[in-house]
Structures are given as structure tokens and as C-alpha cells.
Image (cartoon, rainbow, N blue to C red):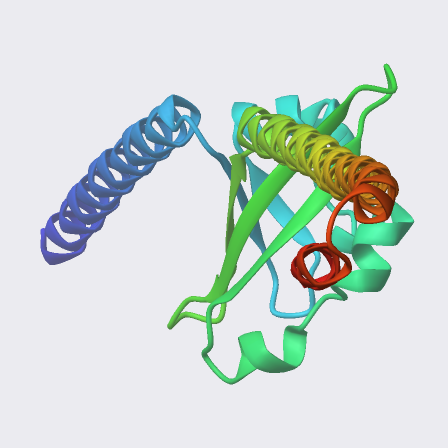
Length: 232
């Protein structure tokens, strides 16, 4: 009887263990499903990896940014992803800072299989459990807008410089024209002064001649006085 009772107890324990294990497994599956749903609902790319950069999980947005299927990403080193060599060379992976607990923020350019380029801003940090987590935000449109604004500013600056050069050119022409007008005016004044002076000299000469004739006809003293007045 005791053996039968112990056997029944053992069976009940096994059944209870199996029920609990099944409940735990169902809970894990449900948690995994909720985690996956939340991960895939994110509008940014999410990448999870080991402390040395081996990718262990990505969401759908991350696959879309890389232009790769999930199975093409999982298990790969982060450096194997399709980043442009220039962006990696200019902003290398800083696992040293991540291991110190710092959040590393940088921009990278991704070239997908269809040759389309995506510019991302990524934030990487080591979680307390030693898992690497990176958030990738697509900033392609923002970068294009910045480039367009930069080009517009350059065009406006060029136009301002050209307009300034034109204004200076017109100002120089105006100064030159003003100088020529002043010179012409002064020359005209000198010409008029010379003409008036010549006319006056001719008039005085004619007067002296007339007085000379008169002097011969009248008293010499009066004529001399008159000539002296003309000379003055």
C-alpha cells in the first residue's frame, strides 16, 4: 500500500511538473510573441547583439534598412552589414566606449542590394545584462533637406556676391562719370574765362587805340590821364 501510495504521489508530482512546465513554456512563448510584436511595431530599426558585436536579433524595420532578410543578418558581425567603407572609416565602431557603459551616437550610410542609400543615426549602448542594443533612425530625408538648404544658401550667397559686385561696378562707373563731368565743367569754366579775358584784352586794346587817336587831337595832358585810367 505504501509503495502504491508513493507511486501515485510520484505520478502526481510528474503531472504537476509537466503542467507547470507547460505553463512556463506557454508563458515564454506568449512573452516572446509580445516581445516580437513590440519589436516589429517600432518605427526605428532595432538591433540586439553580444558584447563583441555578433547580431542576435533584429526587427523588421532593421531588416528593411539593411535591405536583407532576417536570416541574412542573425549571427553576423555588425561590421559585415552593408555600411559604406567611408562611413566606417570616418566613424569606426567604438566597442571600447560601449563596454564602459557609454552611449555611442553616430551617423552611417547603408548601401542596400538595390544600390539605394540610406543614412541612419544610430544609438548604441550595452545593457546591464551585457547585451548590446542599437537603435537605427532613418534620417535620409533630413539629410537631403539639409543638403538642399545648404545648396540654396550657397546659391543665395553667390547671388548676393554677384549683386554686390554689380553695385560696386555701377558705383565705380558713377564715380568715373562724376569725375569726367567735374573735369569737363572745370575745363568749360577755364575756356569761358579765357574767352572773356581775351575779349576784355581786345576791348582794352581798342580803347587804347581810340584814346591814342584822341590824344593826338586834344590836349596831351588830358589824354595821358585817360590812358593811365585805362591801364588801371
